[in-house]
Amino acid sequence: MSLLRSALFGLGLLLSSGNAFAKSPVPTKPQGTTAQTPPKALFQQANQLYNTQQYAESIAILEQLQKERKINNFAIHYNLGNAYFRLRRYGHALAAYRRAQRLRPNQEDLLHNIQLIYQRTGHSEPDAAWRMRALFWYHLFTLRQLFWLTFGFLALSCLLWGAYLQRSARGLKGMRWWAASASLVACLLLGSLTTKFYQEQLVTTGIITANKITVRSGYGENFEALFTLQEADEVTVRERTAGWLRIETTQEDGKKQKTLRSGWVPDRALTTL
Image (cartoon, rainbow, N blue to C red; front, side, top):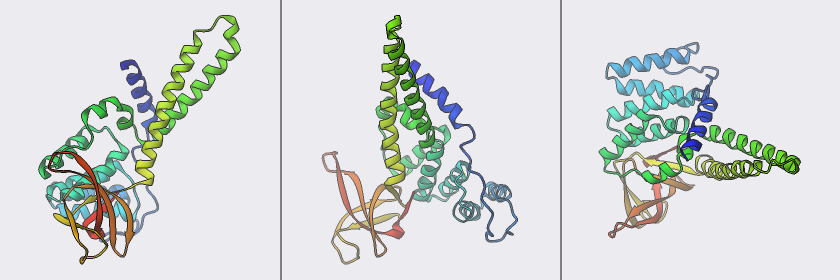
């Protein structure tokens, strides 16, 4: 297993080069700047404001880079999370960190900051440690890296099986073991890729940004109150109607058993990834 993990990690590093930062699109005109102001200059300005503890002003620039110029960049998301964290807006900070995590899933400082948010808000980390160790490749690679890794092992298994079928009569029966091993790894990676694609591309995740919000049985303040959610709670968004969102989340009951619960919250109470 250690040999397999080292091989996957090495290949992932090769695949990851050049993918962490997106290319800058054609600039638009953010507030207080000209249309010709390059994203790098805006990013440096945001860093200067952050270093002088002007966190709200730094957030404004970073959000312009993210939302108006559509730059999906690890450093922007990470610094945005840091600025929100300094303002103790932990829900917004966690949302920014989760976006950064999709670009660099195993970045040490990022994982540490997420743990700090969970400690400050009294949450427990949703991913069990044993699960992260057992499925290390799922948490180690981005969706794109996992795609190319899966493609590589599928191609390798096809080549090995083809070579085995052509040369088995020549005494190369040992190649069957290598072909079967490559096929097993390819199937494992394919299942992980399918799950990751579903979770990141087809499922809408939301993070509560309000201090406390009541979840109701319908989309309106007159409906029955079911339970409450706290800042930095992570939910799955299933439906949007008239400014309200139907969400699902797992909560512990009195016996500390996790149960799936659902209800409606106003869309202003959370941010989606």
